[in-house]
Image (cartoon, rainbow, N blue to C red; front, side, top):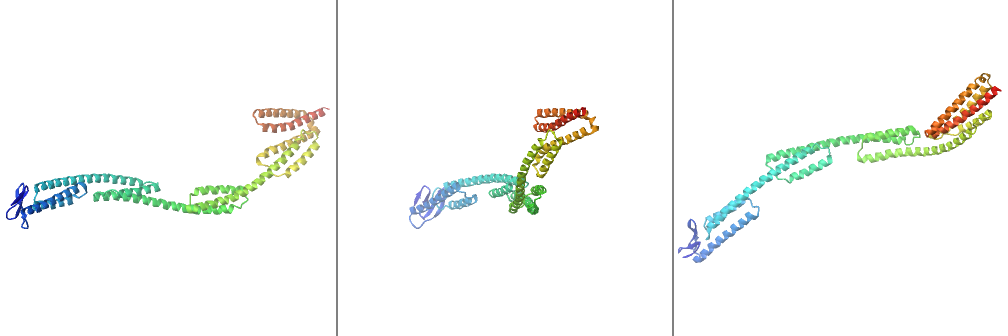
Amino acid sequence: MSSDPWGRVDETGTVYVRTAEGEQVVGSWQAGSPDEALAYFERKYEGLVVEIGLLERRVRTTDLSAKDAQAAIGHLREQVDAHHAVGDLDALRARLDKLVETVEARREERKAQRAKQSDEARHAKEALVAEAEELAQSDQWRAAGERLRALVDTWKGLPRLDRKSDDELWHRFSHARSAFSKRRKAHFASLDAQREEARRTKERLVAEAEALSGSTDWGPTAARYRELMADWKAAGRAQREHEDDLWNRFRGAQDVFFAARSAVFAERDAEQAENLKLKEELAQEAEKLLPVTDLKSSRAAFRSINERWEAIGHVPRDARPKVEGRMHAVERAIQEAEEAEWRRTNPEARARAAGLTGQLQAAVDKLRGQIEQARAQGNNARAEKLERELEGRQALLDQALKGLQEFGG
């Protein structure tokens, strides 16, 4: 008979193991000595120890599911309860019981973690849905579209909820995306229609602009080009592939017309500048006739000057009043001299000579007052014009005084 602290072998070869509930039969051993029998069943025990240790490590360090862990524990417990090993089987049962508690605790922990994750996922998906529904009303087509695509990627990275909740949230999320896509599609369809209408309008504008590019009717054509430009801006943009080409044609047609107009205007301006120079010389020559001392020769000289004046073409518009005013002042002075001569030789005028002299003196005095006022106001151009007129009036006054003296003789 052979024994150790945890088991023994009787004389019949029966192997026993000691437990808290008393000895349990392990098995029968006939193949060798009792010590060999104990050693064999002790190795069986060590095998169970190793297996339990491995399971404990798997439970502690891996994501072994509770179901698989419970199955493995049950399998080991069956082996321990079968008493086919010699060793501290009660200690193994205690370790297995402890392992059951650990697995159960881990299952509850995972359940709580899953509940927390599910709650977080629910809130995250609800936030995604709320943002998607807000984006569905946006007119920022590119930015909103990109954000919605990013939200889909975020959604895919979140864990699923219970089927009902997940389906309801996904339905709202999908509906928001569909609503946005529908609005965007309608917007761009409308935009395409507008751009096509703009293209047709601009093609008509280009055709008219090109037809006008050779016109020499400068004023009306330039005005029409301004109207065409206003119509162009009001038409909106055509499709990108057409807009630049149409604009280049439209602008090119205008450039042709305005370049030709500029060339003609530059030539005209040069000619008018030369005309102005010639007329200023004639005005200066006419002004030398004042004061009128010899009416007949002054009249003939002014007629000659005026004929040369009329033969000269236009002068710049802004210079015209001044140079023509100079000639008109001389012409009025001669006319007034003629009237004075007529009155002097007219018997009926003899009696009015004195009155005329007084009127002319009053006119001269008035002009002098106006000249002083213009000088005081800094209006030198008006002052010069009035001075030229004064010279004519003074000449008339001198003639009237001379005539009055003749009447008196």
